[in-house]
Length: 319
Ligand code: CS2
Image (cartoon, rainbow, N blue to C red):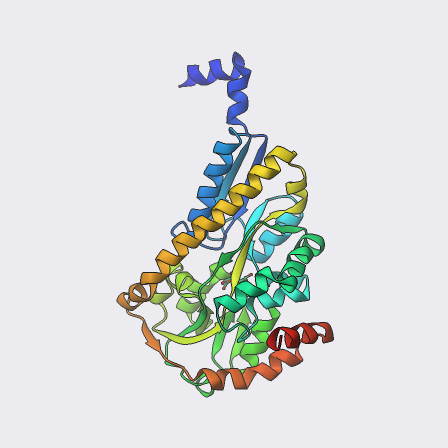
């Protein structure tokens, strides 16, 4: 082995070059190795390497090991790392990103998809590149977000004062405050321990993340609030992307397209049994009074928007 490396390194320069890629990307994800995003990124890495003959490689870091979501965005901007999956967190940089996860806004994934492919979705992608320096290279559809807790919460009146962890996204804080809870922004990787220690009492996420992070060990109920229909964008730093020669750019974008299709397949398959799996882990599902939830927070969400955003909101609600 040593001899082989020696020969390879000193005699056959080409062989050594193959080991060290021209472009090594590092991706930071919030999820662990069992999640569809991680598996899709691994697949993406293999595809990049194969199709570029080893000129491009990808290292994928799970569970916020490399950085929390908001730090990952900053590290990509600083060119320290290269990729992540993000969405509404970008609301901390530009307003339009709030639509990625605006509570009780999209009714279903069809509405969400029309938005993504429509003019405002395109404008959002444009702003992602120009304002935040992150280039979206596809999107991952997500399941609806639900509230988990240790007591049933059918009606917003049941959640008075409940300490609910939310991602660090302004519209979540607005919505959960209006509903009567105490929203606490926190990084995803800190949620499990905080639930265990009781510093927070509840959290909200789609079924896949509830399972992936093992929240069933510390939460008994899933209140079927479906309060957010959303998606996430796999992104690469724009500066990093622009450093690629044209042939590698083409390979990169095509591989990203294939990753999106692969993830959609994994996601669709997973959604078929995820609810049963969570039930088998001991979680109880609670039907909620969704109208009461909507009524209690929609005015607050609308009022928190800027005038420009209010116009977009109205236009999307009444096309
Ligand atoms: C996740 C995030 O932290 C969480 O709860 O579900 O992906 C969240 O949706 C985002 O911050 C999106 O940018």
